[in-house]
Length: 258
Ligand SMILES: Nc1nc2c(c(=O)[nH]1)N[C@H]1C(S)=C(S)[C@@H](COP(=O)(O)O)O[C@H]1N2
Ligand SMILES: [Mo]
Image (cartoon, rainbow, N blue to C red):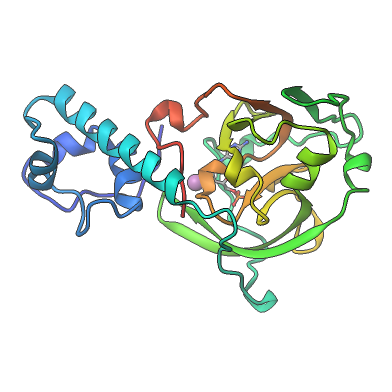
C-alpha cells in the first residue's frame, strides 16, 4: 500500500488522477508541469481522452519516460548538490521503508557479505571489515522523499566510484543494480554511480549506521530522491540491461533526480 501526501490540485475528474497517483506524484515532484498537473494540461499536452483510464495511464507513462531521457541527458557528472553545516544534521534521521519500522530485520554484520556480479573483474565477496579499510568520504546533504518530507543527514563511506574502480568494474556499462536484504531491488545509471557525492555509506552522523537506516551498507546519493537509495545492500551488479527497481516496477520514474 503506497503512502503519499500528494493530492492533485484539480477538482473535476480528480478520481482519474488519483487512480494513477504514483506516476502523477513522480511527474509533479519533478516539476514537469508547472502549476501542478491538471486534467486540462494533460489533455492539451497529450491529446488523450481523460475519460478513458487506459489513455490517462499511457499519457502519464509517456510524460514520465520523456522526462527520464531529458534528465539523464542534462545530468552533469561534475555538478555538486548543495551541502550543509554539521549543526543542521537531524539525529536520529527520519525512517522510511515500504513497510513499518517494527518489521525491520537487523542484519548480522559479522556473517554479512557484499556479493558482486556482472561486468566486474574481481567478484570475490566483501566483508564489512574489508569495506572499512577503504578510503572514507563524508557528506552532509538533504534527503528528499517523494512523500513530501525531507531532512539534512550526514553520511560517511567509500565513494561508489572508488569501490567500482577497485573491483575492476566496467565503468562504461550502463547501470549499477543493487539487491537488498528486504528485497528492494534498485538501479542507477553509471553517470550517477560515478558522481563524487554517491557513497556506499557505513556511518550516519559519524557513528556506525543504525539498523533502521541500512546497517551494514546502504547507498547514499546527493543527486537522487530517497527511494533511489537502497538500505541493507547485499549485492551489487554492473550491467547493460535495465532491471526496474522496486518503485520503478510500480510506476515511479527511473531517473528519480532531485
Ligand atoms: N532496502 C530498502 N531501502 C530503502 C527503502 C526500503 O523500503 N527498503 N525505502 C526507500 C525510501 S522511499 C526512502 S525515503 C529512504 C528512507 O531512508 P531513511 O530511513 O534512511 O531516511 O530509504 C529508501 N531505501
Ligand atoms: Mo521515499
